[in-house]
Length: 275
Ligand code: NAD
Image (cartoon, rainbow, N blue to C red; front, top):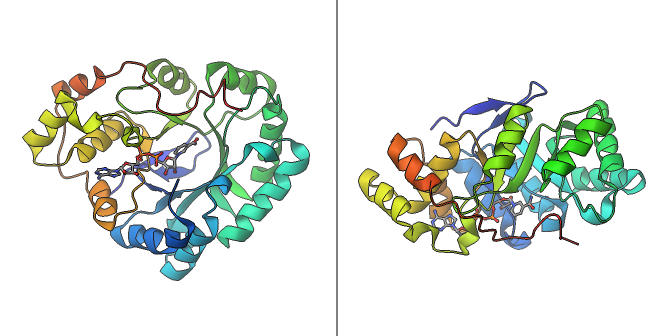
């Protein structure tokens, strides 16, 4: 299996497919991340608020995989926004991960009510300059939040990690980001199991046609759109299955049929309302 490497707007590369550990039990994280690394994943997406950075770090250390072959993302939690707190947050994440730098550091949510994301972003620019992270990006930023960063700071985010799955395909934000060379990462790529995505006709039909699972079809759809994905599973068989998505190709008609599922159906929090 060869996972495509995408180039970010700062010149660094990112494996397009990774393993995400939201809601992976801290006590199981080392074992499951080790499984993912054995399967071949080289990109892990975690966050301070997930409470499992230590487990990610232990799996990395135990793997013996050279650091430059891994791509590790973590995120700054809302309570740590602002220039004072952010430094302590990245230092604590690096300590828990057992790393001297991450590959990508994200502002987890914009929290426009706090009005701290611009100064927080400027702090992330410093962290990048100091080598604490290779790339910097944002998560759950809507167009107005991105526009403020573009207008008021010097660095275009490398990525925006947003809720994105067939029923919530975020076309406008994808187009806006694409025009500015901001890569889109999908969270909840499988809809977090919160609606019957796998029973959608377009998904089920493509799965049957290619002899693969509906989850594999949906992951392939993301990849074909140039979206970065890191599906979460706590089941070793599914962790392996979700990595095995390069042995078939969706037709243009199948992709279009899955595109047509979009109905603006959010399964997670609205970033403008989240507190
Ligand atoms: P997801 O869409 O990846 O759904 C995960 C669920 O899908 C699993 O719990 C499992 O029940 C099911 N699943 C996984 N593989 C399957 C398979 N092959 N067959 C059948 N069912 C399968 O949702 P997610 O975990 O929320 O999103 C993925 C990652 O995105 C997270 O782990 C995390 O790293 C990131 N994330 C980020 C944010 C953010 O605010 N930035 C929010 C949520 C998630």
